[in-house]
Length: 206
Image (cartoon, rainbow, N blue to C red; front, side):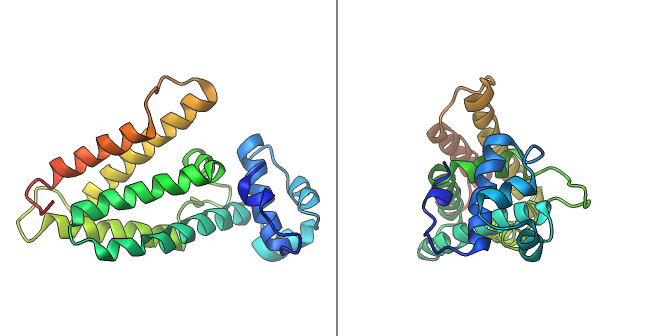
């Protein structure tokens, strides 16, 4: 049972119940295999309430992602106490790992479902909070680059870092679920990407 679902208070709103139930069902059964009927039934509400709050199943998945990224954003206040952009990038990465460790169902949905283009023609992952997360990384990369002329733009480096980190985590999930050959730990992922950050910004303050 999803921690977010099992921890719901008895008087939780139907909206919160649907988010908790959907995250659990999407994670164990897959997004495509989970119906709005099943979500509404398990959440002790109706499909009409699901449509009222989220518009569609796609909208419900987007709400799950937005809720997850919002929680991450609230945990990033510690970055303000760190002066080095390199250390800020590493701390941000560690905070994402902590979020995913605390909520593996959110991790699996973001890594396995987040990049798919849905029937509405958009990528559900691109919520407001996620785009703010991307903008934050852009600002940290730019700060780490400093004023010296760079060979590559900040957005290219940001995409490379996110892609590497996300890909390593996704393959680890595939290893857990399907025995995909990716036998490494989260600690090794952090160490590897942290070393990559150090190499990319060797001239920046550590």
